[in-house]
Image (tube, rainbow, N blue to C red; front, side, top):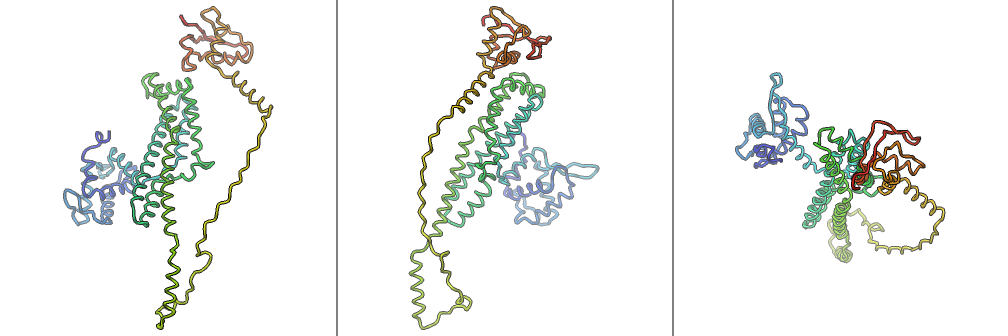
Length: 456
């Protein structure tokens, strides 16, 4: 947990009266100074002094005031970060160097991410999950870690969507409570559009946006979750890499990752609908405000005519500057209000009745028959085995005769009968793999012994 791993002193600079300055200093050092390599203490002190000199009010510390002397000020600020655990000082060849504490750096990276208020590419997030999923399924034996990475990316993506909707609703409340129209527009364009809107929101429903691969993610994850062999191969990869103690725990972990990916991307529409609802409400609010601002003043013409009559009937010439008197009033079609044109009626054309083509129907029936013949089901496999076993208890693969393609399709899957269909047939038949081989003109594979279990 966060507060169990980090020292208590670490949060003092972020809870003191000068927390704004302390946070800005830490983020500045994180971005500009302390990168992957430690820096010399003298360089860090100089950078702290330069940053404090450009800050508006850095002298309040909460416990004691900071001296106005630049040297004492930077030393006091450096000592504060060192004593509270943000910095670590050590020596390299008698030269003192400084770097961030590892746990403190993790916290600082999260603070930096919050400060940036970065948007998220939804298409990029989908491609990240799809890439990890395809990598794991293409080589489940050695790339099972890619599945865990894809599940974590999916969870982070869902957390971003939930946070986005909540943040947008918060900004919506601020905008609706703001009476000042100018401030309303500033809140809309700065806090809403730039900070909370998705970077590729406007292209989510276009043809070539990567967000269209969401269906591929759902299809691949669902197919892998239903395939017991793929789940077993991924689980064996987890055991081989030392990330799971046994096969059952590994299979549960694999199924949990696949189920999480499916849950995230199948239920994503509800979260996107919430985002769309907030966007639509705010856009209507801004459009209504602009419409009110652009509404013409009905009494403006009468007041302008009265002013001109008063000026023309006066014996004293008005005091008007020369450059202004030479201007002509902007009168023209571009400055007159144009009534809204009526929308043209939409012509409704009935769709023609299309007769079914018998050739297309025959093609669809042929495809359905081909799919039926090439798909192995528990029923077809049970019928094939029972027809060969008869009253016998056991049968070797080399004793099975293959008459046609239909027999071959079932025969080639017999060696997986103990794990196929979620091990449904494993309770009825026992399979023993033999060192000999079977060569029957259709297939050359290791021989096996198939036995009917007692009571089956």
